Image (cartoon, rainbow, N blue to C red):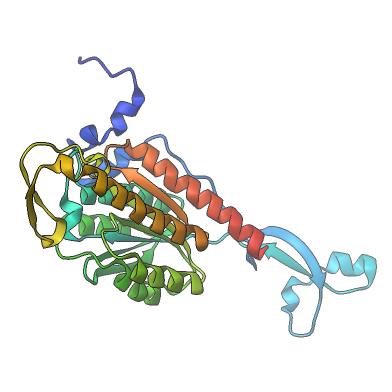
Length: 310
């Protein structure tokens, strides 16, 4: 029997995950040992868990009068309950041509995004919550409304497995239609390399904010995009047919990194202004770390909702 690696994180390494066949198998590997607790909605409704009393007003359902309290106080009070509601989590995944890049990672940016989305969706469905999916490039290519069945999860995974990442990136132009698809307030997880202008992106994010959605922005980057390690006479081919350049990359490295930093800061500033969680994730990062980022952001955002609506 082959020796097992001493570091359990090895199992979540993208290089190991890339060797597994099938997105379902990859997702199950990533979610090993990861569990989500039950969550409570801040909205009051009718369920098994009592929350508080309030005075009866004409029109209230008489079935919820507390007769024991009436017997003691000679006043009518209605029972209120804390409703356990399902989370609606909608993934918006970039399927443009630039997401095929895998210069320094074992997985392309799209394969990493698909594995991450499928892993989180598996957890969400396991706790009887609902997941939805939108794939976009220049515009929305596929949309699956949120459902909470494992059959729907299989359909979502099949959609991610069968798509070909192609076309230009248009994040901002795709978020407007996404907002129109969502029928109730949701947790929206946007996964992209964001090789796009930030101004239209800001309009899309503001539309989601106006409709009351929580948003997590996951900015995927290949290690080569982060460090630009190239040297020697080269032909640099831009993502999504943006042209070719014959050069020595060492002459461009400083300028490239400065421009990239400025672009990231624009997106971060935009997200902070809207109180959205933003995280840059390298495709070399273990997938359990990326998944933990999602879970932590969801936990924080849930706490914010409770404060706002309780």
